[in-house]
Image 1 (cartoon, rainbow, N blue to C red):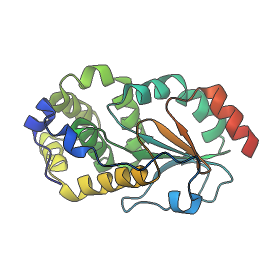
Image 2 (cartoon, one colour; image 1 turned 90 degrees about the horizontal axis):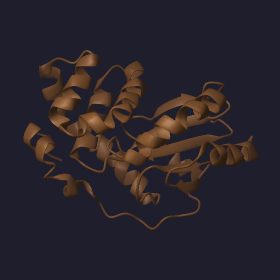
Image 3 (tube, helix red, strand yellow; image 1 turned 90 degrees about the vertical axis):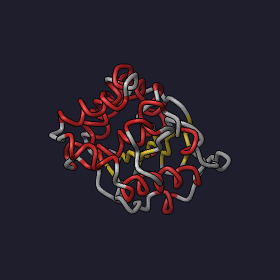
Image 4 (cartoon, helix red, strand yellow; image 1 turned 135 degrees about the vertical axis):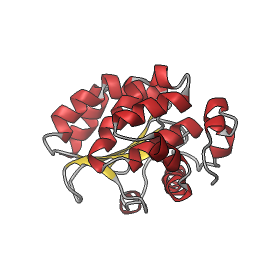
Length: 206
């Protein structure tokens, strides 16, 4: 994995290189394997490890369908099931291009408590920052306290990029073909999910 340069972010020329071969979709996966934390660690909210119900989302920071889920479904899901610790929610990075990888690198390099707020900003302002990823991401990073130097150093961090791509490759092995993709106690739910659909599935397990 090479560093992400401003030129690559501006041109998107290397986006295709991030697309790896993926396995066929599976109706269910080995839950124990799915819930093994990656080397970078999992970013999770809600109930602790070992919860009766765990929802895993694989998403790309540049995915408009992921952004729509974040805007239309996530607030209610978070309020009703995550904040109340009825379920454990795990967010896993599945970058579909260099801009998404760079965004996730920034979120991972920020203080841990800033991770989910940054993910929220990426989705809320997607239509704006994705038009000029290099400057758009820099402006968002500055809101999280990044200097220009820290921003540049983060995008040059090959071990961080490798760790995120390992999470993406792990998702591909579980059958993730696009974003968003969800696993509810190992059952795969592909594409955007309505709150009503998720609620019905979650309530069966509680």
